[in-house]
Length: 145
Image: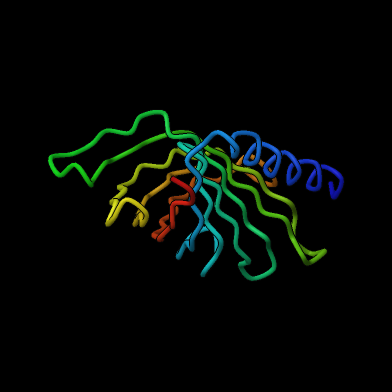
């Protein structure tokens, strides 16, 4: 199981870094799920969040399938599909993996500063089957341009 967790973590990192050279890249902080406070990255429409929570390193990776501006051109809503993984630090816990559907709002306060909030219902597939709803908010700084 530990090897599987390492492989999955490698896939998360590789997937996030593949488009980084050609994508709008943003870096910042996320509050809420996947942990209390964590790192948030976004490569165009692929956000990646990671944080420590109790005995786990949590990571989420999503792909926004639809992002639509609202009446205010700085405000958009999005939805997508993603994955959620938990790597345990404690031998009494098991690795878990879940599929999720994030739905959220993105506000571009300035061309460089993004504020976001989302809810993501998910279905845990490993180590047990369970439904959950995660919520997060954060801020990211857009690099380049």
